[in-house]
Image 1 (cartoon, rainbow, N blue to C red):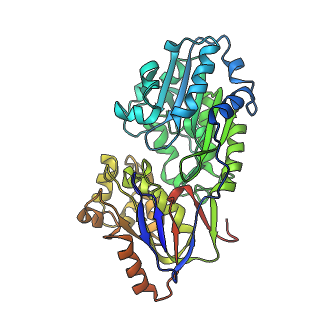
Image 2: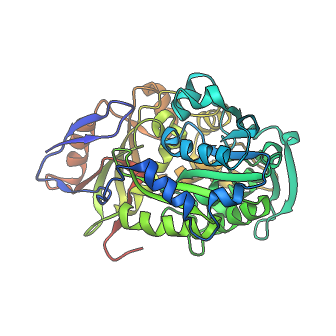
Image 3: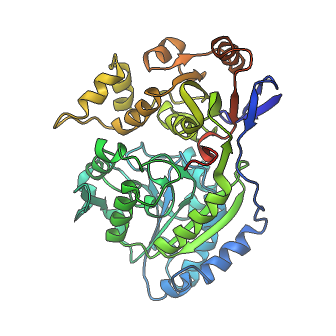
Length: 427
């Protein structure tokens, strides 16, 4: 069967033998919101758990709107105009409205990337600034979290405004259960000192710090605590289908509106197989999530639950910007055995920026082999980062059949981390 999977901006067409194809796991189709502006305006007027945004904005002199960075396909050019119009109609001057790009500890998004994020008009009319997570001095200290005692540092830019709004996308998230809501604060506008603890080995190693689980997930709980300490007046989150079309709009209270969105996304993102497969072919959901190998780990972790121990994850990810940050790149390239890294993170005082992604990657490697298709990282380098390089998906399929036999069981997840893959009957 010919199947299209997400890869870069153009996608990838692959051929999987019918005899081996167990199932194509996809997001459940939900009605697309055609009249998005009208629906968003309705949610701003009648939100979940708060007064209308217009009422909240009355009397305020300034506003800050946090948005996701370039690694998330949030349709900001669609969802922000109704918010901006509401704020201005409520009396907040345009020059007093700041759009804060929640980069976490990622690099800043400048110039053309801001047009990609916001469309061509918004950057011309409004003040747009990047969160700089590695500059502790640009953050305010708010105490510490209850579980892991992380110091809470939140961007000072956020506190300059009287009205604080957080936007984002709700989708499965490989450590926080689901994105959106509280993640618009932590890690989006928190300093490295906060992130490194809440993405530390104890939090990452918790059995419930995985995709699709909110209840009992300490990463979720700590991020929510940080967001409450920072103060969020209003959230606006959306859900998307595989074609990046809006299927849900959730607005209002930080917890209540997010919970409403999570409940909806759960009905959209979960798909199952009857029993574990020998191999899964998946992706990192294409652009912009597959810009780096760092982000590619998310596709692996979401696919892993349906692969039997000793099985194979074949993942296609363009990685146009390479492996990731310098720290993450150096960590992978300078580690000979991943077990050495797992031993190191248990040592007091050991810490490397972005190590949490390697830790999650190791949970995959402890169970499955990872075979990679990527034209953004040369094959010599791929061999140094604990994956097997492939020339094509079909090359991988041939190797799977050679290893597991003529009737090897293969599943395909075209949209990678946007689908929560499960074996039927298991959480």
